[in-house]
Length: 219
Ligand SMILES: *Cc1c(COP(=O)(O)O)cnc(C)c1O
Image 1: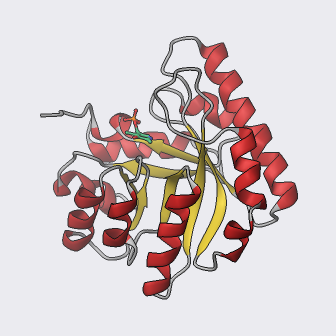
Image 2: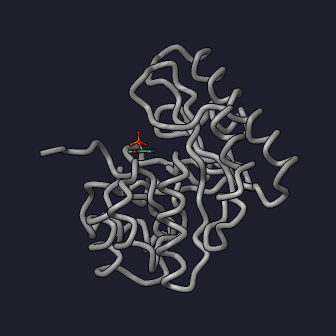
């Protein structure tokens, strides 16, 4: 199946209110343009340099999402154009984003990444760190970032129950946060292997790569 066919099939399955981020990391511009011509405008990348290059090369009405783990010293390269940063997991990173957003006279929307997986390898805040962050004076003083939601990755496992449990845990943290910050609206969870479960558990944004563009080749 072509990129266009894959994309249309996935889009036809998504309920209303669930945004599709087409994860184009490692994929060439031709593949992105094929999805673009089929109507897709939101793309996700996990390396800043690669995203900057694609932003320069491709149509300017594409919304670029940074979905990967982000180093503070890379924020400056994308502050001008990034539409949403999914993986914010420390106050220091948030401060750096705020600083560079200010230079460009922008407010950059961000998602806080929450650690839900049982495996140790995934980044993110736990519930206590999340609450400390949003209650801190430093956070309240930052005018050029806006926390619009949460993001999380489930354990990479065939155990569907475990994946469901982890997504449900993130959803309940999302609901609790909404009662404190009324503008919280995005719950980014679900990838190629688990987006159906994520949607059943309340996802509003899925990040799908290989089911659209095919397997990635890492050289
Ligand atoms: C690569 C990546 C995805 C997409 O993964 P697929 O399994 O190819 O759909 C989603 N989220 C993050 C954070 C990623 O790094």
